[in-house]
Image (cartoon, rainbow, N blue to C red; front, top):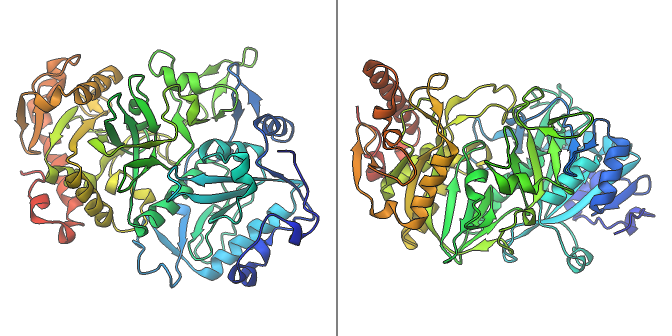
Length: 548
């Protein structure tokens, strides 16, 4: 679609409800002063990024190489949700969801609008969140960088010409003024970065960070509130489907293997990060994938490597000045190098991205202590315990200031994005698993043979072999032994995985005393963490925790 320029606010494609008009005045954007580029072609966005945005290049594979500036990861401490009467009783307030007053939001909103109104050009992308038409949301992104527009072009579901023509008003609008700082003296601000969501006004405002992942996870946070309110379960998971229509869900935080392990050439990819489980099956929230690129190779991850081509966005990578070949092993800018690409760039993507009810629930963890088994079969109660616990390690680069793995507990394997209390999501998941007789597994893609720094990261080929054994039915009928203290059932053999790797006690390369003390330390961390949820958990779930 060719760029156009609005002649007057009345002629603009943007219309707003009376409440919003009264509070901020037609979204605050003066469409008579800017060149408005709506759902611009990929080629045009490339041209603008190269022309107007320093630090932008084209890689040898044809991807747009760009920089997100000072911020190369999310800023969770700067996320705010507006405290207002229509949602305040629903939201899980605390360290994840910090309150922001309506007045402070309007100050940030006006600051963003003032910045955007001074740009020579604005990019608007109108897309969808959610492949199921019954539940999808219309998301509008207004930004000043071609990079951000192309990123959301890839990550949202792209409308057809007819859908764009009849798009109407958005359900939610993101105003990205990330190149302009928040005022640190505004009530509720703790830095010059602010990522704030207002469910009443259906708006999100970004200041002080140009990291595009804030928009992606902002949309997920929005869906994480609205979908359960609509009676369906939003999940931080990837999903794929086998030739026989069997669907698997993969839970896990960034860096645990969701994107990598769900990109399986033998199975159709439904999505790599965000899904919703409804009464008819599962659907992907997104229209693309956002893959970590550190140490990426064609040998280890051929589907992802092949998706990096014209139309993809490579963030914060280092490349050869002459050949433009990217060095995916270079961590000098950040360990959180990323690529955003449309999901159809994966050859075996399932389109539309809607699958059947899951048969396997795979919970991925990155154990930095090296004492959780590479695979365990979970009972229903254990599945709920580990879902609520969400144990993993923060991986270097996914958040600002994290340079090496740190043990952490992230409820529902996605605590930074939860809006409701964790037990609300867990209760819905338990019911879904019961209704559809899904098997549950805990997969450790972290360390084996010792703690981080001593042991080794479990080889990707072993994790893939374990996943294959789950899908083939091999592990459903395997012989198991009980792993002490944690009470986990671990298989005695898995095709393609050395037997000594399967049992952490056998794989441990240090002393027995060190091993025992490490197991005890992690068990205590589990118990201390779960105490926060014990008052709302059932007795059978509490009973499956580690026993010392």
